[in-house]
Length: 302
Image (cartoon, rainbow, N blue to C red):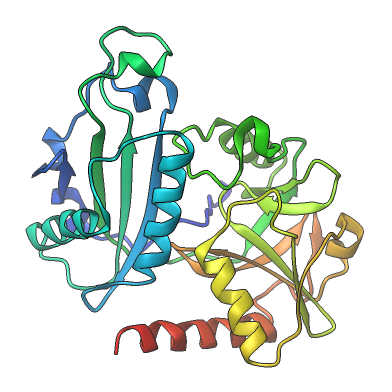
């Protein structure tokens, strides 16, 4: 049986079976946490979300995450009924109710709310937004480096569904992941509209060639918080970094490849389309970036 590996795997923690979920101001048992079948997020994927990590009682890079969340809400004309302080208060209410102090992941989900009729028009959502927080004890634990397969699905143009939107509608990425699994890989490598290497179905993508770090231009991928921090780290520590167009030919001959995201920070890639990348393990530049990233987090906690 093939071992299933994903970029969001964590240590088993039995405490997660009894966590409490924030739903519209109340913190309730996991088994009782429900939203209406008329909710616009359930019906249409009409909503936005954000993921954050907790270390030593602090939500790391909180303001950057909130800037992205509120930008996404404004883009889809969603009144969230909360400001940044209100979101933080909801996070803290959930955290304290679950007695969580560190090593946690929170997923904030805000939809346009319950519809009066089961149809698309946003005016049918008339009772205000639905606001949910799922917070789990979470220490990333990935059994081995990730295997990627290039798929035909691409991240779209900004005038269709802007890939910078953390929207509830993730079907394109789910289909990409399914295609990758069918090809025998763990997750999908997605190209941009011009055929250049872009991103994966769940994370931002980087390669290392001759000591330099490459990532896509950022025009067609999620504006990842961790992606941005990695670019900053490279620039401030004399590691050459380029945001540029590059092809699969460039990628197959890379010395290292890694993924970035809030959940797992930096995750090594072992192979792409059956080609082993470098040694097939986390390379020295990736290890250095991970060390510098951890130092950056520790600075945030002071």
